[in-house]
Image (cartoon, rainbow, N blue to C red):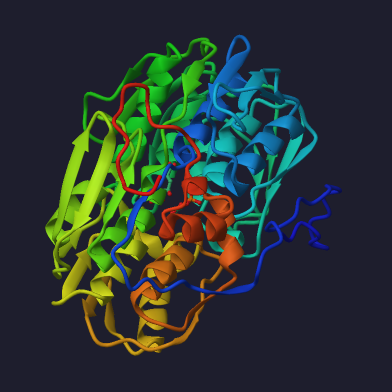
Length: 467
Ligand SMILES: O=C(O)C1=C[C@@H](OP(=O)(O)O)[C@@H](O)[C@H](O)C1
Ligand SMILES: C=C(OP(=O)(O)O)C(=O)O
């Protein structure tokens, strides 16, 4: 975390960049078929949307089973820095605290540490325009290359005053004036769906609401925009999304929430992948039957690769039957690319991943990073403009660099299941969205009950062997 920039003194107490953990971690290899349950913490995307809406709401909210990872803890802290109360409250599950959020008019001056979280650097600038003073945004070094310009330009067009030194990236300062006019704006959000979600989340609190037109190449990650629209509707906000690439949010109050966060389905991918690599069985309890999470797409992808996939009241069960190469467009669910690429490198035939050009601006250039690191282990991967072509080859031991990217570390963990001697550099980077990954992964692979965070839903039939 790099707030101490001499050009941008911000007088803020930095949070630790990552919790302490082993820097380089030998990934466990598994010879026997896995037979285990992975009970996952809450969704990052849902937790951070609920936090933003709760901060803008007309009364106290309760967020049940929130994810507590670096991205969401930083979001909670950012809201506190803006004057909102976010406090723990004993939850229904042992060891799992809810969050109570008491809203307050956002205050400045304030400094926001975004870490490496797209959801903070994009979702909070619109909220910061409502503050009564300047709000400085900064974060990790890697975060300074992630684009925010389309959100800042849109806010300027809606009446905001912002100093970003022409960078379109952090650090920047929003000159909060206690409110924003709002109105109609055109945005090229082909670089990230978060540009649209950001404007939608605070739009009801702009004087004229907001109407957004996307222009440009097709929008990535559409399920995430749908998630934003649904959470707004949960809070009583009127959103019109009937026309493609256009959204209208009416000005209104945002109702307080009492909501439960679904398990993070994108983070489920690494655990489910173990079933395919080892021809074993993995069960994820509490998998939602209906969801806007893009990670739900993993069910189709794994079935295409050769798994038997069953979703019922007990949750999701994936049984590894084969590992075929596939031709897959992940434009809607690009977060899955690293784990799918790792599976592809271990498959029986080549894979073509398409439609994910924008992930070159995720936590790192994921296309380049995956090609480089899999090839470093002896793989045969080519980058394309919008994806990867992966031809399986026998891989060997080596250090897998993670580029501060949690999902690179998860991809390495999948490779390590089959390839002895894979060492994951900076495995603690997984804390961005999944706390305590190494303990979870180790106990999951040994079928240890300690890996479960949340009990199966009442009435569900437990399965998965040694639980
Ligand atoms: O709104 C969100 O919560 C997210 C949207 C997506 O971003 P992009 O549209 O930039 O891919 C996704 O990849 C990210 O992990 C989370
Ligand atoms: C792209 C991701 O995160 P962010 O919310 O920081 O964009 C991700 O989690 O894969």
